[in-house]
Every structure is written in C-alpha cells, then in structure tokens.
Length: 79
Image (tube, rainbow, N blue to C red; front, side):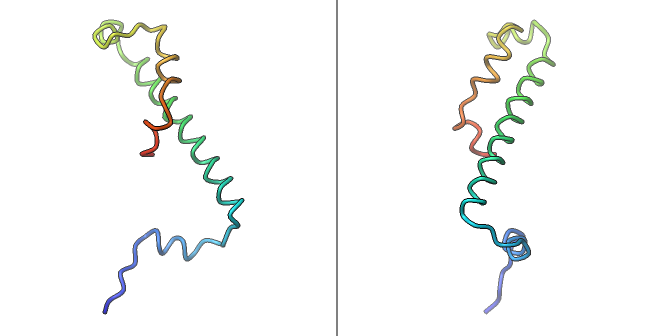
C-alpha cells in the first residue's frame, strides 16, 4: 500500500490549528477579497475595451460599474 500525499494535505499538516470561528472568519474575509478582486478585474477589462467593442456586446461605458457590481456571488464561486 502506498501513501499519496497532495499539496493541500501537506500544507494543512504544517499550518497551526484554528478554531471553527477563526476559520469561518478567515474564509469570509478570503471570499470578500476574492469577490472584490473579481469585480475590480472585470471593470478593468471592460474599461480596456474600445467604445465600439463595448457597443458590440451591448454596453456603454457608463454601464461598466453596474455590470461589474452586478456579478452574482454564484458566478464567482469557482474562485
């Protein structure tokens, strides 16, 4: 029988143990930062497009903040 160790298994063995409340707080902070980063990246990508390219996808420059903020958490769960 062989033992198959993955990177997450090794990393979890080297981290100090956290309580459940610390873990959930850290996870919420991580998710909040991830959601913010995705919205920021989306807005930057859209701002990089020309007005004609935005019109091709049915947007105007004034729509960019609304579109970036309107991303649902479900869309960002893969992060």
